[in-house]
Length: 285
Image (cartoon, rainbow, N blue to C red):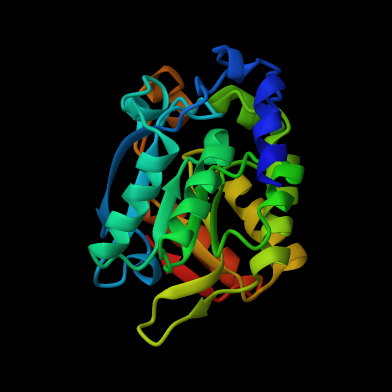
């Protein structure tokens, strides 16, 4: 299966964009990714969900570039300007092992989509060398369904965003055609693979799906649409992180309707709506 993922780089089809560039010959598409994994930083992260960070931190690896182009991106220097450096697969495996050695509860891959073959090549190597902590696939949710299916048995915890329920919003703010359809199909596949969250004896997740709903100003109805989808099409027991961390960063002020923060009232309204649907495993962040 790993060889099939690498073949996708010859006419890149790792994500729904299907740019078709030949990354094996140095061509780069929308995400900017090449043949080597591009890493911006790695460290124990204590700001993730408590069931991921625990008390020793989540072993977070931030990958450079992105297959979306969110105008409000908080990590725009990494995703848009692609800060970081290219590493070998062996280097990436060594990072995973080093994070585990530091006591991290898991390996948390942030924006991994465009480096899927290289990451799972490194994971295979790290597992052979003794890596045993769970793997977290931390994604925007803009995923190719066939690629996701090839990851069955490799990912322990899926951590996708749900940003939009309307395609026009996805295109306007993230240049992501078909995002609602693609994201919903991806989340259903993720749930089919790992199910609801299972905690270990320390209260830290060892398996399962955690969906992040980012509340964007003026788009709170889309957040509600996505909550309704989770309740009716996934599970009322699914863990949902309701995020109010949105800030009008990067180019957000070019779009007056989202050039503000989320009010307390809007946040409470979305939360209560989710609860009215029967969703009950909320993580408030």
